[in-house]
Image (cartoon, rainbow, N blue to C red; front, side, top):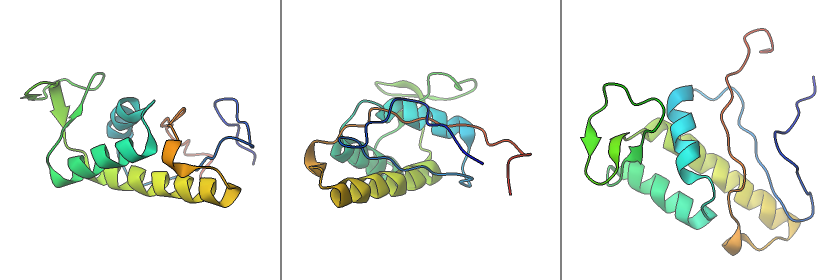
Length: 123
């Protein structure tokens, strides 16, 4: 089975990593992805490590019913399991970029998304 990538992918200047069937919440992953999209790799890793340590909360914009407010961001949570998995994916992208010979210090997250896996497509 072939999967399509959701955006244009230029192999010479981009690196990618795909995580499939990860044991994490889709709703939490959507919020984390929306928060780190457009940020640099180093900045995103710092943010996610702060979330795992409980120092910074992820603002929830879509799935925010019955959530308590955090100072400065509004409704938010600390999705630690999701952040650990996303950190591993970011490190994988960094390794892929290094293997291609790209400069990893100025990499930006241009595309990150979460999809619900179909039950019929799982092996």
